[in-house]
Image (cartoon, rainbow, N blue to C red; front, side, top):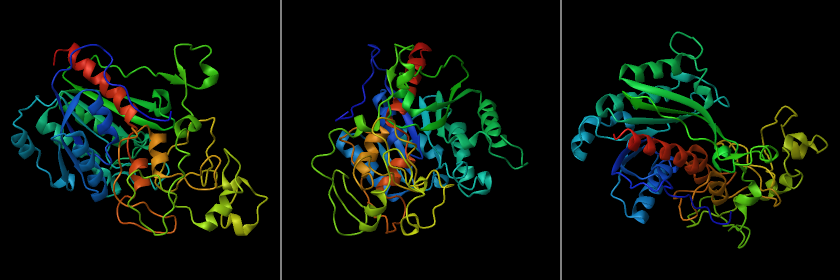
Length: 385
């Protein structure tokens, strides 16, 4: 997997002129998959300044006319956007996005709608009510499913969201999908919702990959892509190691490991967590206990990666360092010519908004987005919408 290039449409059908609008665009992972499925993205709405730099760079590189709107989505008037793009109700083919996941993440405080970011989920409903797009595509963490609503009932938020879609005459379908099932070298599970306006008939794409031990029986499926396969080709030249806190390196292949952390990483076997090495001195383990089973993982070359998260950076499988942002992009399924802009945070530094590692971890893996968007495109063609 020395060079990661997603495939274009393989149906042999002529692509219709399909138009889409991206909400909560982030670093553009979901957008990359939607574009490859044949959609023209009219605008990308994103608040984070560094993500917007990344989005503008992609727009210029791909010579697209996409409008990048750097603003709080709550300040955007969808009626004005309709006028700007000269489209009427039901003419937008796809409205899509992945609202902030922190209010619902099982790894967080799970404050749901009490988190200031929680209600952002329903911005999709606000835009849908105006545009009445033919299809809506949402990505969110699994923690959305049991999230409590205003009445304190488990699952209330998700049920309210689905009910709002139905109120607007959409038929919603949802599924928990693992990115590894679609060729991404990462065991990342997310809830995907696809809602079609006034029509049923959409089906989520069949998975293309499975655990290696299962592929003997399921011979039509490929084995999961491993970390070793994903990182192949990035070993030489070695990642750059600038001596300052923030870096501006075109390929994002930068090693941000402090000397003290290299000593800690050297004590972790491939595929294990630092906290599991209870024989180590407290000066190495610091405040970690055996209960810290999800912190400071050294990835294994023969397995897919664990879910990339914002709170930490995984260790390289065989080198005593953290993974670089470019290696994170490989594990997420980005093309090698996709560039991140903004700072790369050292492990002892801070940065306003999203640094490059977090831009990747927050985004939707492009191959997963492509698989679903390709299915949406086929649905629109079959329904002659």
